[in-house]
Image 1 (cartoon, rainbow over the protein chains, first blue to last red):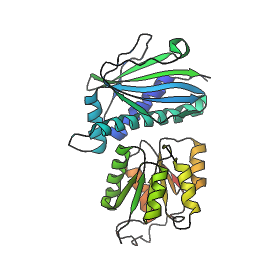
Image 2: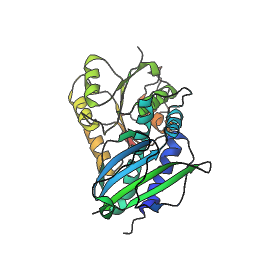
Image 3: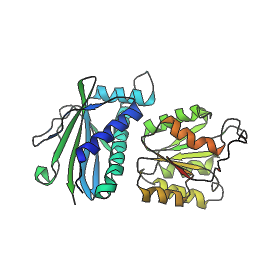
Image 4: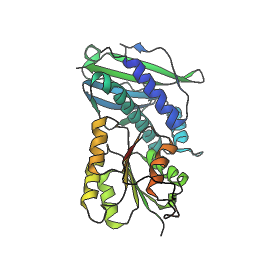
Length: 158
Length: 145
């Protein structure tokens, strides 16, 4: 069965941000990126293993992550750096879980690792295996017509 | 005696959201105790009495399934209701959780209403014994949302 992975991923992202952060996100056209992606300040990632294997990541600024943490916890004050990182890791975990549910009926199962979060300005992430093995999909998402974060998927179908 | 709730999740953000939902469901958020994984939850259960456990499945050190099995095998905790709150939603995982002894299963992402709707039938409101005659839901009936 032909798998429209970008659409399933976009639907998963929209569901998670709407339900947990009350943010109405819109996606811009996805692109298969071959060049190195320069990080925005915070990157949350999970590894996928099984019928689909690879890496799923969210890239955003620390400011956007802070907004998400405040929205999710419904608090006015500034969340701690640990809480900001935790929020983005958990949002990504839910995106991966939602994607898994959508994919499982079409293309088999995969397992999801615990999320890891990197906070560092100007970082870049290189994956073992490179683009030949894992095609790279990068989807920008906007809120109020302004790009706020990217979702990246490097995957290989068994 | 105030109802005590154990929230088990490796995510601080989720623990905070669940705590808030407990308040919306008529329970006292100040009576919520947090644990980061199954191992810490079992340590808490050895020392304290709890009336409800809300637990994730994928956690470091000890996952939720192992934790639920241990709770059900332990006489002192065997009857404590456990609601699973997980991003894992495939049929096999849900079946394993129910077989292990979960009383309900809520998928992440979740709305406060869905989580609260799993807790209300357990009859754990602040006036604990106020289960109405119109509420004919059997707390032992597992439900998945």
